Amino acid sequence: MLAALDRSFTGRYKGREAPERYARAWHVRSRLGRRRAGASGLGREKVRTIDFVAMDTWKEMAFHAVEVKVSRADLQRELRDPSKAEAIIEETDYFYVAVSDSAHLGGLAIPETWGVLYMTQQGEIKCSRKATRTSARALTLPPVSRAWVASFSRALAARARG
Image (tube, rainbow, N blue to C red):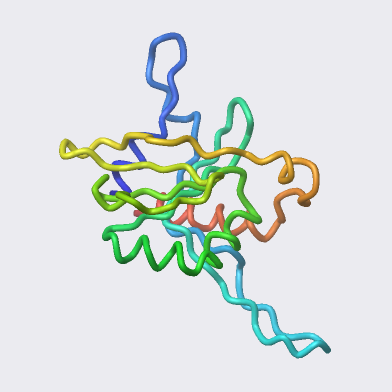
């Protein structure tokens, strides 16, 4: 599924494929490591891993995060506990859930701002709903952290090594 996502995040320029439009990485961590508790004693902040991230290097310069779900049960777990998605949404501009079969979506309430992708029987990724960048993100959230950029860069370097 990751390879199919890779193929789907390509750009076109003057009728030609332009793969350099998106910088694409697999298995990007939400943070570089664990943060120890301060005086508040809240414990460690969990490091989350998102399956696929594509950064648009042309227009918006936006991060698109995609969480892959291979079964309906996997998707239902994500919907019951959206803490992983929330940790990733803090650092990205658009959040998608991608399912291996569109039948997994039947009757489930996917949050409004999440985009929905599914894989066809031919192995292509199709979008059934685009993710939205909320105005709250643009107005109230801080810019992407250096730690997120470093984590994304590490994932890019890992892919380049093979």
